[in-house]
Amino acid sequence: MKELKIETTLYVYDALSDLDNDVQDLMAHAVQAREKAYAPYSKFFVGTALLLDNGEIITGSNQENASYPSGLCAERTAIYYAGAKYPEAQIISMAVTAASQLNKTIAPIPPCGACRQAIAEYEVKQESPIKIYFMGETGAVAVSNSLANLLPLLFDKAYL
Ligand code: THU
Image 1: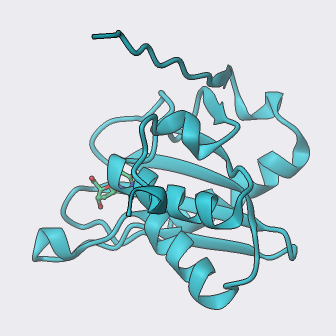
Image 2: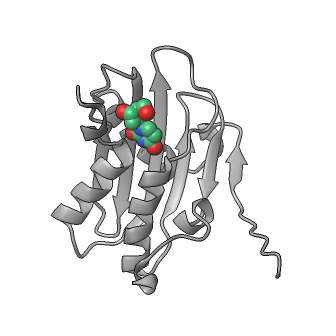
């Protein structure tokens, strides 16, 4: 038996204003997307913006459904749209913001496990890291230089 220890690294900034202008701009797109979220059941509104290497910014928001599992998270809405519209493009970075009508989100809200797996697929496909910035409605911003940092032991095509 051997013990396997896994370390990961994130960077946390106190506020969005501590990051570069291009990141602030990407997050502003995520906020705009969040404001268009369809979340009548959870009242939890998530927006995502992806920057592609062709200069395009693709946004998405969570889309809920009366049949709850039929809804989709913001991150997957955006990443699948990017994959469908620009299959050859690489995703450079991704901004995520979440706000709730029930309480103020001040901590960075990370992508859920299913979204991490979906993002991982594209990071593996493009063979270059996707940088991820995530935050609540306000407050600190967490930065991961690669999706891999958010999903140790990821399952990918190498196992198939
Ligand atoms: N949600 C996202 O859009 N992204 C995540 O990473 C976590 C959760 C959405 C799904 C659902 O519409 C609502 O937030 C509450 O879970």
